Length: 246
Ligand SMILES: Cc1cc2nc3c(=O)[nH]c(=O)nc-3n(C[C@H](O)[C@H](O)[C@H](O)COP(=O)(O)OP(=O)(O)OC[C@H]3O[C@@H](n4cnc5c(N)ncnc54)[C@H](O)[C@@H]3O)c2cc1C
Ligand SMILES: NC(=O)c1ccc[n+]([C@@H]2O[C@H](COP(=O)([O-])OP(=O)(O)OC[C@H]3O[C@@H](n4cnc5c(N)ncnc54)[C@H](OP(=O)(O)O)[C@@H]3O)[C@@H](O)[C@H]2O)c1
Image 1: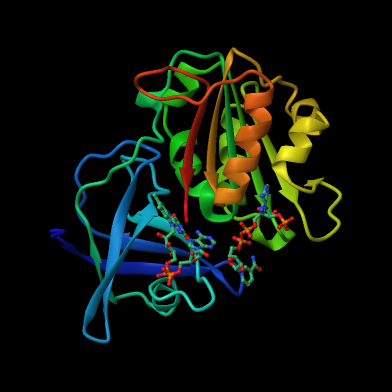
Image 2 (image 1 turned 90 degrees about the horizontal axis):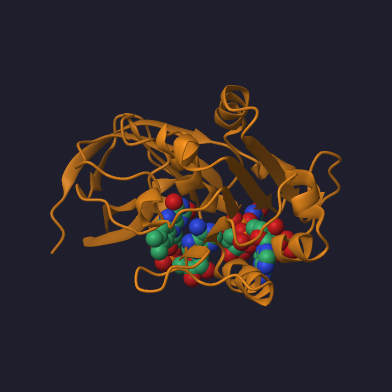
């Protein structure tokens, strides 16, 4: 049985018709950037809970959750209706292995996300440690439409602070966009567009973190394995760490 803390919604920021950031004031135990916790609501007499990544850095409050109201989704459609002042259950203990501590030594870090999968990477790039651990960091955010390229202010701030170490690459798959790479992540690796734009090669000196759509995770991993990179685990160090959102 999960033990819950009561959280209070500070803001429900709506980015598009389906994308939201829920800012919640709630106590949480010390966590690592990249981890997730669980959120729950009582819906028609039943407690419904799901995991959500923490977008805020470990030393920041309020807690920040970036989510999509999945059409027909039981919990996410209810989260979308919350307003400032509403209460929500928040699990006090975060979990997850998509964190810096889990990574072997490497020079370059590639953070590749689709949709709301950018959440844990935003938490990671807000930390001091990641800039000490890696020489070069590339954040790729792949979405369907331009308006889904959220958190531009946070990304711009990081880019200004770490201009020599950081590349941000937006990707848009379903409309023309002159500043984004068009199409999907695996194709952009295969035809070298992603690395040319990053100014950095994905090689054995790299660690690649993948988060979001499970098909993207699977297809990208297949391309990286073909290149000779290996999946990372505690027992067998490699180059690829993953988190599938569904
Ligand atoms: C470790 C972990 C961390 C997660 N962090 C986040 C997060 O930070 N933000 C977030 O929006 N979701 C996140 N998810 C997904 C989230 O837990 C729920 O599955 C999602 O909110 C749907 O719940 P629901 O009750 O509304 O839908 P359900 O009625 O349970 O329907 C589930 C279906 O929704 C779709 N779906 C689930 N998650 C997503 C998603 N993120 N984007 C697109 N389609 C999706 C899939 O088709 C899935 O089969 C995470 C999942 C995991 C495993
Ligand atoms: N975003 C919306 O406007 C919207 C609206 C209504 C419903 N939904 C529902 O919400 C859910 C998630 O939507 P989302 O937009 O966050 O996420 P998504 O469907 O995961 O799309 C995000 C990005 O991932 C890409 N992608 C999908 N499969 C891939 C693969 N195998 N390899 C590499 N890249 C891949 C998509 O490219 P492609 O465009 O080429 O697929 C897109 O660029 C879906 O279940 C969807 O039905 C979304």
